[in-house]
Image (tube, rainbow, N blue to C red):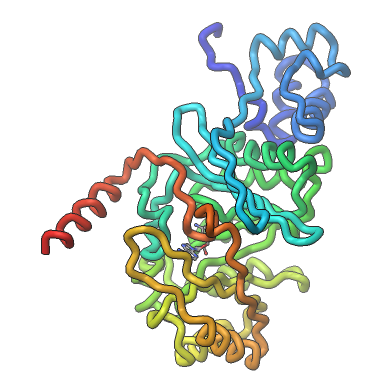
Length: 363
Ligand code: SAH
């Protein structure tokens, strides 16, 4: 139909691209060529795809587009980190962060506009939730980072705005694209999905994708985790931990990376460390301790460095590899939990939190 919206080829992983070219009546390898033009060479103009026939280029020009998010702001940090604000077709905005570290470079991508999970210490949560990103909007962030930096990153982490396992299909396709030989060629150990623990989707993910797993733990028991990461009320620790253990089970090189934000006086005592050690017994684990990154309106404070170090030592002595995640890009609000973009909230939460703030002011 002439009124059909043109297909955005950025939404297609290899399989979908091959299927599309078959539907056009040509051989699937043309689809692989197009994938390579877009992602390996950064070409988004069909006219420049010189190994396709003129006729095929004309067909594509008439029926398809290659539409990227637009970079509307580039903010470099003093430590080399760069944050880009990207605007999507409907005017929503998300943020993407590039983190250089010696020979390595990590791109931290967003998977949703806002987030629906409402973790109490995260500023993305305070923005509310609008919608899932498409595959093209997720891989488009990697596309831009590659062009901006002149080469593909060595690592991609789905640790930006949003809960990736709440946007399952688009995230899986985008992660497939990151690992494809025709595109960014990242190994399965260098693509990491971070989740707050949507347990059924962890099991599903294991069936269709083999990537590295990071889990936002933040507390050693259900009482505390219920408060900090409310999705815990739906998927408590006794369900989450076995799901994570199963995820890494078949690969001896794999460990679960646990993320643990250090909140002053909340989850940072030696008793908490001991409870964590008990909780993780039998699960191949690596612990990433993250100093809390403040944002306007929060009452939380980061634990002092000595307490973080004592906590880390306690875990290390029990044989759990624990590292302090360096805070990167906090001068440009690019650190963990500081990404906000521009979200037209549809969950109603933003209004609630504004009302609450007002009520607190009055009280
Ligand atoms: N929704 C996914 C992806 C976000 S990853 C998840 O929950 O895993 C970003 C990491 O930073 C998560 O572990 C998150 O809990 C953590 N984080 C959120 N707010 C933070 C803050 N203010 N300071 C430090 N870490 C924070």
